[in-house]
Image (cartoon, rainbow, N blue to C red; front, side):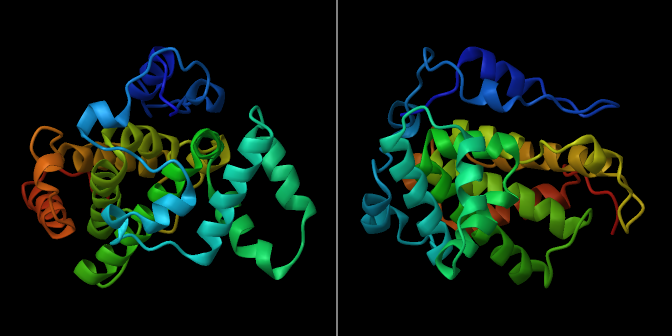
Length: 252
């Protein structure tokens, strides 16, 4: 099982967005596997070893896997088995050369990932599939609670926080930490762009990183993994943090 090295963890932990582009190196995220902390030892999880096992595992029955995501992560699994040292750029080259209805949704999901997320997905396609489903659940819960899934507002803060809480539950806190940070790695064009709400990409990223952490804070390895806390409880905890003023929200 893939695990982040001390160096990679350090980079993730010290990522700051204050006047400079966050440094979350895609290579650092997948470099050394010498520092191993298995998810099973961390919080009692034993992640399935294949996508097929994941789809049949009753512990993940509440997760929804679209045809596109299943196609993508099965393909990554197959490529990784055939070419153990395949890179994210090589996967991109493969998808860009292929055409056909069966590839389009999978390719779309892949191309929407940041470089750092792609590196993580290559390292463990099973975890990547779980993370993708958690993201879709977060969007669904956000629309249910707020009637929309906005940007820079309370619904945005909720979405990021509950996504990270769900990742903690279904994949483990270390993976939630990794993906939550990798998702915010963008280029300078994004950070300098002024969005319709008047805030820059850098300001949005600062907001998202803060709220990602607050979402992970709602999950306790010591208690929640034993009781298998419900998604509803996690949503309520996030809302409680919003009401307590703990979230970073740019505008109403």
